Image 1: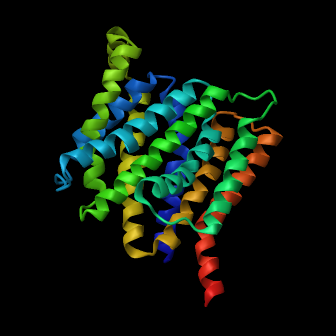
Image 2: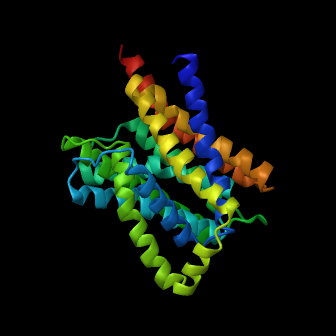
Image 3: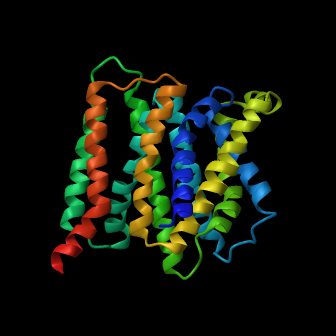
Length: 295
């Protein structure tokens, strides 16, 4: 990877890691459903002027939007309201890699390798250590469970992406942008019933410059910038070269949450974090090690 592309990779890591701090700040200004709805509406409105409509059939737009966009962030935003610290959320959400592997076996009938089974077991053990923490921390059981639900929704979105590609269609930024219309709608419907119309209206009229900056970061930096650069790197390098960069996201998330939000992590949670990262590393690099041993 060239020095320029490595810098772009570091930008992605920072943008996605710091994204969790920005989400936490955004939830102080808007309800979870309204933050999600306005975010994806802004993405759709701005993005549709720059990206052509994808040729992917409408049903796949909807499947992509309801899982990767609505499901993932509805659960994540709610988790952070119900006591999931931003830093820990950045780590636990990476369990999507484990859920993706499981769903690939169940839904796509893919073959799982022994090293992947071991990686899943290790990562799940780490998540169990985090979830069973009995120390006086700010993490709640419901917040932890909702974050896992968000990770599973992300994984289902990955399965939808695989299905789209297998059918010969593109799953690129144009799909992200245009499917955002179908993500914004369920957010607003949920807000209507969960928050009430009066709260929805107050969330809109109370938007100030700081809230707008948060929405711009979530839309332009984390989504368009992050995913756009990720697609660029994936087009130039192998998945095995680019994918490990995502392991830096929880490092930035945990660090920035500690610095900006003053979040603290218990000793047991640090142990669980370390075990999860070992499992994710095994899942990412296990295939390479296996190939080297066979040559």
